[in-house]
Length: 203
Image (cartoon, rainbow, N blue to C red; front, side, top):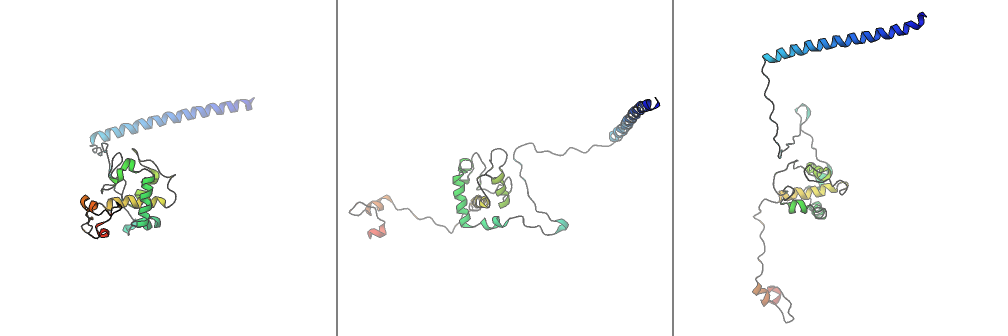
């Protein structure tokens, strides 16, 4: 009989011991919170940090290096190869058109999507940031094109987008050709009615 009572007594002792421990913990917590209330009442609380009130927030990306060393270049070899490369930019232009980027960005001038021809970049102007925006998409309307641009193709599209903002500065070395007047074109018709340039017609 003694062996039957022992497990019962052990179980009751454990329950009472656990209950006693939890009551002691509650008393200590109450004492600690009362002390912290009296300490904080005498000191001034720091003012809350200013939080953005919504709208566009510009993110500034800064390269850092441990120990004050020179930052490591974060640009991939594919991004370096595509940036400023006329062939990559042309392929990027074709992709821009085929993916209907014009629908939101209106040939870089902006519309429903942000302008790409100015120097304001919400998510950064590096090739890696532009490629990331294209691949992953961005909140408020920019879809992800991850399934459409495979491998290094995204950097060709990024090179075209980057070139839009770099080519907006006026160039004084480029002159547009003067269009021929209508009367010159009419006078340049030959006997068969075809229009020829003034040089071809000998005038």
